[in-house]
Image (cartoon, rainbow, N blue to C red):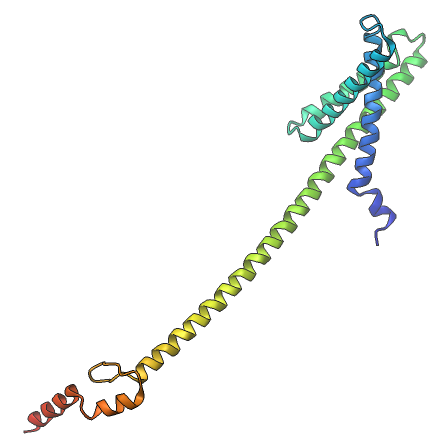
Length: 210
């Protein structure tokens, strides 16, 4: 049974956090785009739809790029752009005193910092999960191949045993003198007394003795 710690540090929990972050990022970009489109798109509903879908597309695209990008500088650039975008949402240039400016800068940098590490954690956890799955698949494939190898080795041993038995049967019904096979031991026994090769050898031995 999974503990609370396991659930908090799981890929699913991190994914949920990333989804909430994307939604927040999309809303933030939607607010910026809505202000930019204020004079271009006069229809209020069309402006909201355009800015919302564009913000969601940009937020999702930034997430995909930051997760899959191999260059280490890209996530830092995206985090910096996140901080700048949030400063623009807070209208940093319209701040009246240093307290507002400091608060806006702190919140913007803090949220960009958390977002960067959230995406970085998600990316690392996802790769770790994929590596575990790949390792498990390789182990399973290796197990299947070992089983297949064992079956082939067993079949080879069976074939070698059958070949050995066949050789023994052929040897048992083959004349050792003329190497002629007779198919049965009775036929071989009947042939041994009449084997011409054996007779020639016997006659040759007799001539040598004389």
